[in-house]
Length: 380
Image (tube, rainbow, N blue to C red; front, side):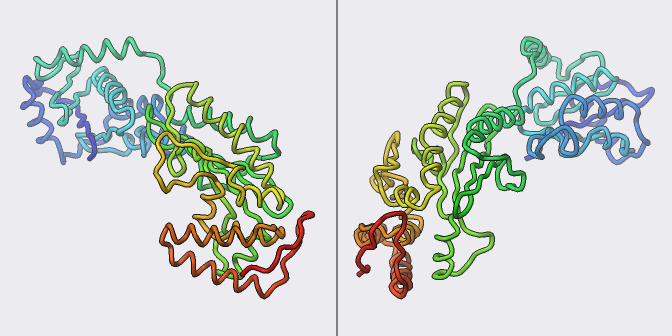
């Protein structure tokens, strides 16, 4: 539901509204009238654009903008006697306060239907018995006159922290990554890794999601041969740093500097070492098939929640088996049996059929011996 303010200039010679009902009747009478561009609207629009960012300028991302259109440009094109201004949901109180105070200082009047108040030039408030509420808000805004940190500010700060964490590992900013707020990438011997961050929510209830993604072209060539290619190309694995604390599919909420520090500690102490290891095929096999490599903890754990990233990856697809087959893992048959048992516990008949399809494909091919590992016996 939109939150609208109706702004007008009292016609010359007309008595100023004495009650909230008078203000409502005035607005109703003026709506639909075309009186030409109002210089006071233009001045108000300019101040609104200067104070808060618009989607066309001053905001790095559209969702960071307060105004979806430029109030200055809108006022210059407006010939109506009443200007209806929609107030955004984020930071609604300070934005409304600014618009009302600025409009009345310019000799304009404002009707707030939702609040049930009207504001007239000179600081008069209707109904008068509510004037103390506005005066209290004025005092509160004066006490908190420091600019509030915006979502855009937080995004820039977190992007800086992310860059400082990942560039020392060879990741470089990749502006082509448009599914996240910011993304960094690096090449591996057989593909590409990305670290991608997105900030969700509204100040002060923000959540940070950092995805660690890898595509191994050798693994995906086998997967595509069995199950068909996809556009865009699939990733071999993806996990969030929040997975280590039970936030696998949602962002990690934060409000304090200490909580931000904890998010990036997870990235640097747990996620990035796994990205380093998994750049090689043997390391990728360890990550995707050895549960002790990547244990997960939870504030409160569901009985069926995966205990490690390796188990998570098995729940996602049979790719861990492709990796084990490619490196000649001697435990390949064991991983097949565990994968099948997991699918039965999860009651995923489709995954079992996918497993059979994959095994049929692999049986027709010589199993490579990778990075010093002996070739295992053929899978059952």
